[in-house]
Structures are given as C-alpha cells and as structure tokens.
Length: 274
Image (cartoon, rainbow, N blue to C red):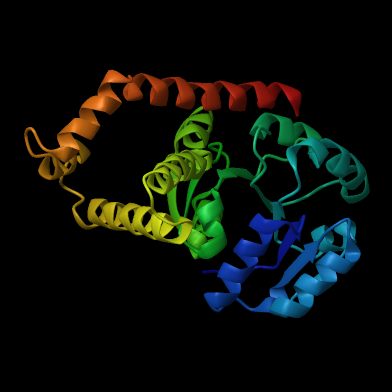
C-alpha cells in the first residue's frame, strides 16, 4: 500500500477502526492525522495509535494527500462549508467518504467542484477487522487512487466495487445495515431458547456459535448454493424441516424482501436530505 499522508476528518468508531487496521497492517502512524470537534478525543486517539490528533481540520487537510470524510452525514455540509473556502483548490487530493447518504455529486458541490472522490459504505464488523465495504468512484478517479481506497478499506475486511452509484444503496441494504438483521434474528433465537428453559449464557452460546459455524461453512463452500447448504441440514420430516416450514408459512422471504427494500429506499431518501 502506498504511504500517503492521510487525514481523517471525524474520529468516531469507523475512523478508529480504519486507523487501527492501517497501523496493524504496518502503515506509519506519522502519516496519519485524525481530527474531531472534540480535541481531547482526537488527542487520545493520537496517543493510542501514535498518530497526530487535533481539532484543526484545515491543517490536517492542507498536509494530506488523502482525506477520509468520517463525520456524520448531517454534519458534512457544515463542516465542508467551513473548510472549502479556506483551502480553495484541492489539487490532486483524494477524498474518501464513509458517510451514508451523501452522494458524490453533493460532495463535489461542497468541495468547490473537486471530482477526485471515492464513496464507500463499510459496516460495523470493520470494527473487529472483518468488515464488508462497497465502493464507488466516478470515471474521473484514476486507477491508482481507486487502488489506494481499496487497500485502505481492505485493512478492515473485504471490498466490493460497484459501477453505478445507486448500487451503494443496495450495498447499504445488504451489507451496511445487514449485521443488524442477523443480530435481531439471533436475539429472537436466544430469547426463545431462554423461554424453553436455558440460561441467558447458555442460550447465547448456542446461538452465537451456531451463527459463526454457519457463516464459516458458507465461506468454506463458495461453490455451493446457500439453498443446497440449507437442504443438506434439512432431513425430510425432521426437526429442521418443521422449523423451515414454519418460516415459509410465516412468509420469511417476503419479510426479508420488504426489509431490504425499506433500507434501500431510506438510503435513497437520505441522499436528498444531506
């Protein structure tokens, strides 16, 4: 990975996970500057990872080759409205946005027409280094900058490029919001196991290890359809078949479809708000 100077604007959980991933991968802390409106928070992050931490966005951006926009989407316009007039021409700097609901066109408008922008949608497992991130870049972004963005996000997991920016909203529905779907399903399984007589600890162990094992089986069998893996566990007339029949009678497939479409539509709405 190229050793460019990186500025993280916003020092929240996702920025912290990316910084941690970069440092773990051997990226020099001397080339990373993280800022936050809370100067103490940024300074503590600096001490933890051996990077520069401050609340000076202007200095961080001026000295950076790559700027990671990691503020909450509702604060993006205000932050860039203060930054852009001071900086003026951003030259060849690469902007990588991990803010949900802020389109490339909107960012270009906020950055004095600057076009060298990669938009990303990571998810929360990035916090433990096993995330999934979707990336989009307009055609003007060159291969070297695309590769840098990919390398940076791969420090915390896997990546997938999309050719159409609208597909970032599909990434949001499937991956960005996806961990919460699994957490909810696991929550209901744990709660039911408790009602059936198990302790909270035992119920959680049963469910979390089963979820982990199922995910690992999917990863270990990339050529096997998910439906086939499910069928291999489902003996005709057995216990699993009874449970699967209950899911199908409850129209689980329809619920999943409605839920993912709701997430996609909300992502589209957010693009009109920020």
